[in-house]
Length: 52
Image: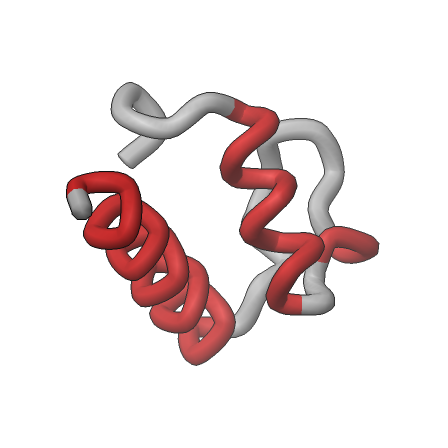
């Protein structure tokens, strides 16, 4: 996913999820598996909206 999304977009999605405070640079290792799943879900929803 890293090569398809900018760091700014990934951080924006993390902010939307309320998890931005646990991200350090490009390290998303502090997110739970559930949060990672939600992160991907938000990314897919954002991509689908941009196609409309």
